[in-house]
Image 1: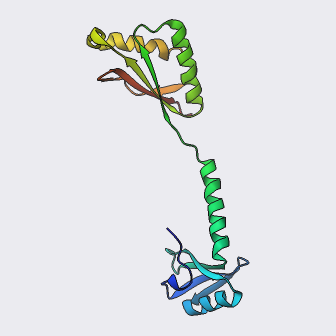
Image 2: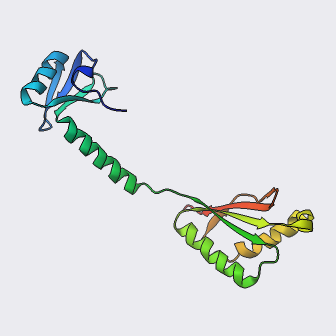
Image 3: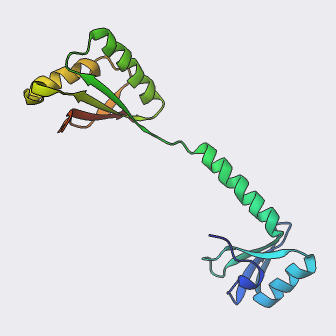
Length: 168
């Protein structure tokens, strides 16, 4: 949402801050706008929800530039998490499980969640759930990072579990 500037401001009184950052106090709108025009700058409503609303006397282009810089810094500091997906089958070999467990550990240390699928085909879909959990535990034992896991759920393609790094 764009901030209101100059004649777009609707408040009758404003708490005004000048271009040096000094508080000029609560002024009527007309007087605040006149001070901004005298300085050759804009009156920008920076906090419309405050009582009275807060306005700043500043060049609007400079204000927009500073706000975009703040948003870029905030965006660079925020960390996005992804849900990574990994598939294994009942007959996946031990060496392959070790490699996949290393990849899971790497993703967990980066802060991502991992969706682990025990993929079932044909008759293996009818196997006992406890047997399938044992097969899933083969890879879970190999993960080197402490993790928490939801209860594995049975889906149309097999057994699914979501793993995330344990919070300390």
